Figure (cartoon, rainbow, N blue to C red):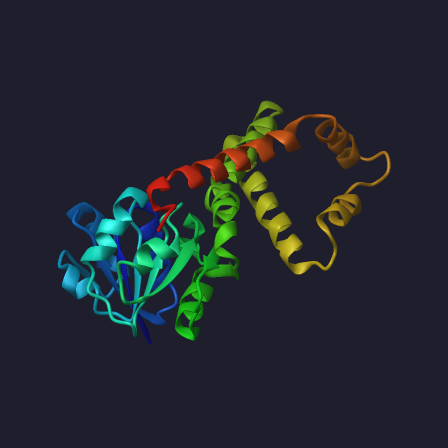
Length: 258
């Protein structure tokens, strides 16, 4: 059983705690200074604590605090070279944290789907141990990327769920306006996104080929696709990803020279 702790149990930290608890493969300690945050995850971990010394005992330590706080928090942690620190702080490079700890530093950009075991995550670091990989696989899917790609990964899979929720909601309300009940439209739209995503992950065909497979000549889908292809939706989504990527780059300018 892999031992881990999560320092900071807000939205993302709480999702990590709940996701790790799903499999029963891990012993998880949750740390936060906010009692309400600990209460929210108390049923999903082996221990909650406000003692930072307790939170630094496990072999793997997730630090899920805001980017402007992470350096100070990591400096306070007494970690050994045998431990691994996983930081989810957007914009904060591993070099900035390596200077503040003896632990192996891994940079992680997860998303809230960690709670359901369907997370998409990007990971950067010199060494991804088998235990770290095991933890992340229980939370969902991860890819190893170069550190220089973390800002765009932050935009694609970190911010991406909100963009997908926005598009899903638009499909839902299009159905409602044409007569579907809101609850039925929600199920149909959400399951359609889920099924389409799973098809992409399991298929050997490209996304363009999958679109063509759904589009029968003179059918309903091609009629809708013609509207999308004539619109600016693709450019707008690109602009949203670029804006999120640029914001990630702006979050920790003081670390650039470290």
